[in-house]
Length: 267
Image (cartoon, rainbow, N blue to C red; front, side, top):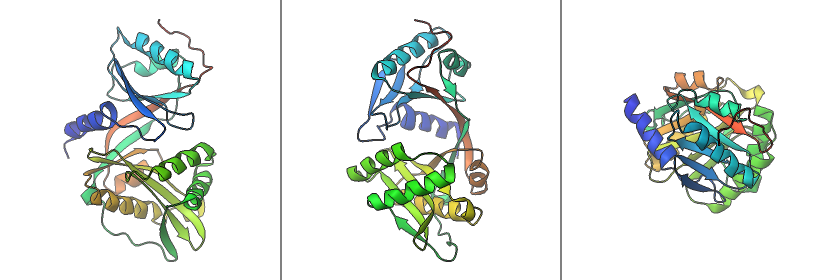
């Protein structure tokens, strides 16, 4: 895998030329930025920007005004290779709050698609209905300790759309959900995104995360994608490294809430 080539492909396919990841959202190209705009339960934010020291503050202020007029909280995903180098500091000055840095990890689909044995008593349940979504969100709340209300609404919408670019799976211990994950792909790209992988505390360290990566890799292979991509937390990054994923870049989600007051926003 050539790092620079894959990074350029990532920027083009998943940032500049990306499609909306929800049926109720749209991708807009507004001069120097590519952004996704949707309902409050959708992901709203800036995916890519082409700014420099002279234009950055002006473009940031334009996006603040745009999303502010909609009453939307939004995220500006800042990648380590984005310019200008102080983009994150400029966003902070405009009222954005930086969340923990994530590692963008990638792997060849073919290297991950081998069958992985499940722990005894565990079976995988593909999610095809609202009851399955409830299982996914139950795991999410236990694994991450956060509300899944908005996630549930978004997942139900995606499931109803049935575009063939979205799938979810739950690992079940009998009738009890213990791990879950989903895969989202953009048609016409070489990447399949792995999202939401989480396991309840009692079942961690028993191979479920690895099994769900392999399961989704086989789905991605069937769809003709070459790479798997994960925005990994500090917890999942070492697991992915052991599975053969490599670091492509890092990203810091910078979030702007409608009532945030920037210390300095150029007009």
